[in-house]
Structure formats: structure tokens, C-alpha cells
Image 1 (cartoon, rainbow, N blue to C red):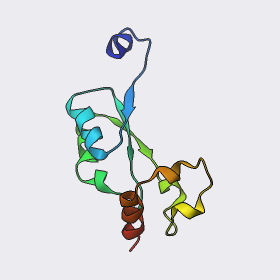
Image 2 (image 1 turned 90 degrees about the vertical axis):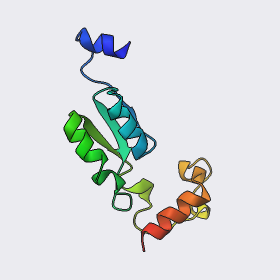
Image 3 (image 1 turned 135 degrees about the vertical axis):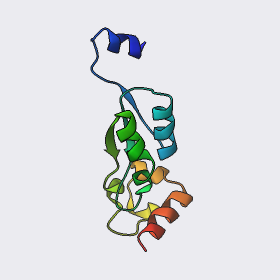
Image 4 (image 1 turned 30 degrees about the vertical axis):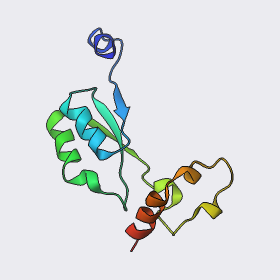
Length: 104
């Protein structure tokens, strides 16, 4: 439906917000949309070697998601710092460990 609306000129572009860099690759390989949003920051630079070259090849626009890693780039964090309702309380132990270890 989105491709049809795009073809009719009623829409300039559409895309997807990807949970991982693999989702961005899947989006491009299947030629879905013209833009995608993907995580990229000083601690998570995985998109540099494969995703960004593919985006250039397939002429996709890229929106950077979480450039400041939800305010966690600067210092080690734990759940005890956040108030009830803060989305960072939903991070898994694996994600906290990855973020904290990436700073080393």
C-alpha cells in the first residue's frame, strides 16, 4: 500500500525504524522503503562497515537512532538511577553489561 501511495506522488518516502543493524540490512536487501532508522553512537558503531556502504549502494537515507545512547554514553549506569516509568529500566542485564563494557 505504501509503495502505491509513493508511486502516486502522495508520499515522498517511507521506511522503518530498525531494532538492529541486521534489520537495516534486511530492509535494504528487500528494497523496503527509502529510509531506515538504526542505532549508531560512539559505543555502537557496527553499522559502519556493512550497513552504511549498503545504504550508499542502494541510495537509502539513514536516520541515526540513540546517538547519545539514552544518556548512557558518559558514565556507567544501573537501574537504580532511573525513576519508575523510565524506558531504560526495560534494558536487559545483557544490554547494561554491553553498554558498560563498551566504555572500557
